[in-house]
Length: 101
Image (cartoon, rainbow, N blue to C red):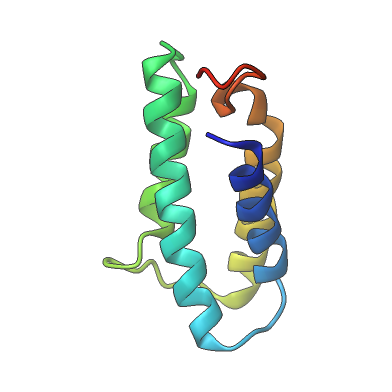
C-alpha cells in the first residue's frame, strides 16, 4: 500500500472527528472500509497474526452497507483511534522503497 494512501486515509479519519455534513461520513466509510480491508489482506499475506484481525474489524466497523450506529462522540474517538492505529502500523502495510510489498 502506498504511503500516500495511508496518510490520506488517516487524515480523513482525523477530519471525521469534527462535525461535518452527512455526505463526508458516507465517503469516509467507503474509503476507510477499502483501506482497512486492503491493509488486512497485506498484513495477512505477510503472515502477521494480530493485524489482519484488527484491520478486518475496523473494515467491518466502517463498512457502508451494514452501518454501526453510535453517538457522534463515540465515533470521534473511534476515528482518532483508527487514524492513530493506521499511522502506527504503517510500516507493516506500506510498500518498501523499491516498490515491493
